Amino acid sequence: MDDSTKIRNGYKQEDWARHYSEHDLTWDIAEPSPPLVRLWNDGKLKAGKVLAPGCGQGHEVVFFAERGFEVVAVDYVPAALELAGQNLKKKNLTARLLGQSFFDLDSSHDRSYDWMFEQAFFCAIDLSDRTRYVQTARRILKPGGVLVGLFYETGEEGGPPWNTTEENILESFSDGFAVECLEKSEHSTERRQGREWLAWLRKK
Image 1: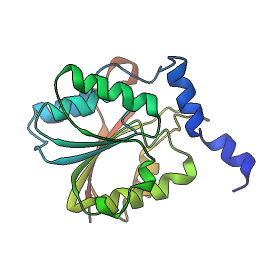
Image 2 (image 1 turned 90 degrees about the vertical axis):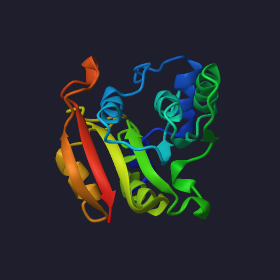
Image 3 (image 1 turned 180 degrees about the horizontal axis):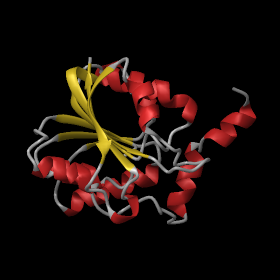
């Protein structure tokens, strides 16, 4: 892939940082994702060690830390982690916040996590990094660990967010994960209704 294609295919760190500096966070829904909340309320999720990649302001980080999860959150934009830290502090909660790329998690994270919660991260990364995403998720999850994902189908060209279809998800994950559930969420926030694929992916 040449440099011109990579520029078309994805944001760089400074692009995301600019969104935070300009307070242009149109993707942020100011609450934990309702489908993930619903899974918790329905008893589908049990407290354990969870990784939250591309955590942003940390709404899910706060929600799950409050419910007894050991949360490790990753974002390579300093302003995002600062906001996540502030949101945790407001509720006197703690989580481990890592200021780095998800793809650069070192070997100390290997086979360490019961869960990985995906929420609008897969659709934000460079399309050429989707294979690395799957490889990293498999590497950090324990045997039998689960990636619970909300994958965003925009129905549009360009991005981010990049369109993510049912076929994209199956193509990306079927080799390394057992796809135990893949369905359009019925509990998405209003502006994402009909656009979020809820996936329950168990590491093979």
